[in-house]
Length: 69
Ligand SMILES: [Zn+2]
Image 1: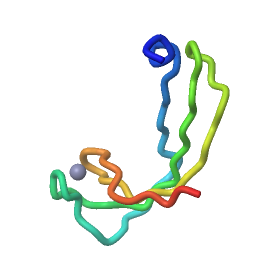
Image 2 (image 1 turned 60 degrees about the horizontal axis):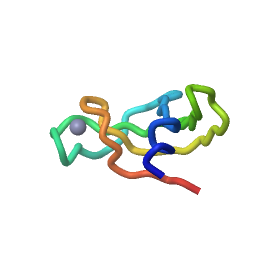
Image 3 (image 1 turned 60 degrees about the vertical axis):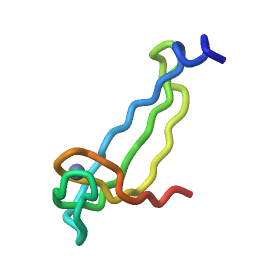
Image 4 (image 1 turned 135 degrees about the vertical axis):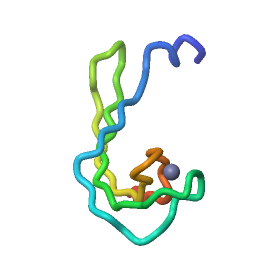
């Protein structure tokens, strides 16, 4: 399992976002609703994509709430 961690990583991309009500609990920055795309890579080759929506901080990038399904 330890070796597995070195081979697999995830890249998170923000597709688009728009301002939303809310304040980041970590830095106090503004929140925004964003369409996210997570690509899971094995040996740097993407093999799985997942689209999801989340409320993220525009300043530090923290995910405040996610709507995964
Ligand atoms: Zn923040």
